[in-house]
Figure 1 (cartoon, helix red, strand yellow):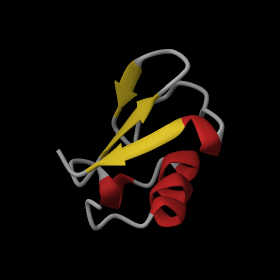
Figure 2 (spheres, rainbow, N blue to C red):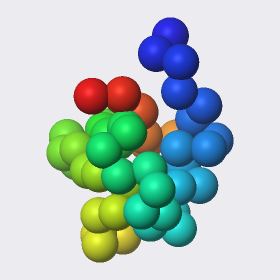
Figure 3 (tube, rainbow, N blue to C red):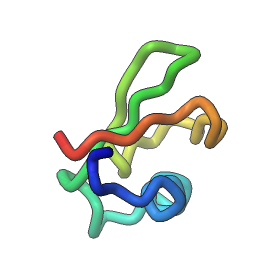
Figure 4 (cartoon, rainbow, N blue to C red):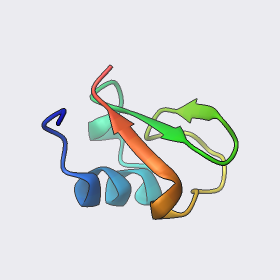
Amino acid sequence: MNGLDPAACYRALTTRDTRFDGRFFTAVKTTRIYCRPVCPARAPRFENCTFYPS
């Protein structure tokens, strides 16, 4: 467990909340890429995301 709330991280990702930039990264299982919360790309499905603090 990494201490991150997946629901809160996903909400920050879908709204591109700048307050969370640098606090976590999102790894996308299906595309094998990672993004910051402010990434302009389309948001992946929640079930395909894993969140990491760094």
